[in-house]
Image 1: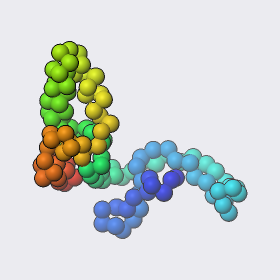
Image 2: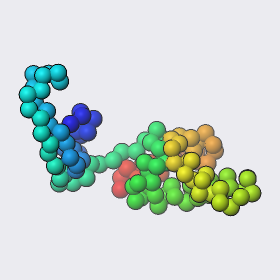
Image 3: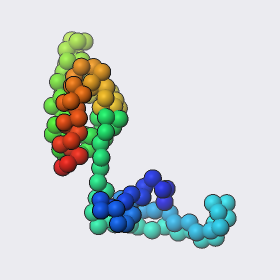
Image 4: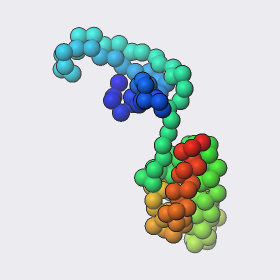
Length: 127
């Protein structure tokens, strides 16, 4: 299990991981594994998410509160991009392209102010 998949519980009392299938390896080193196996893990609760200005639009759109807040903003951006080309079907293509950009780009493109973005992140992270 890669170390980055292990998180601390919100009260910092115990580590936990997302639900999934994990390979367990035991040995003196990574080059001397004496026992390996697979384990199916079902987490008692989902991992808490914490979005930052470096999070991508796609990451935020997977969160229900994030999608509700950011979705309409993305639709306006996609419509504006499609309107610039004069092609209505460019909206979906523009939206797909935008999903990989970081949230701080919304500030750079003057879509949101830094204060607005931080407020949105606060709402999403508290949900």
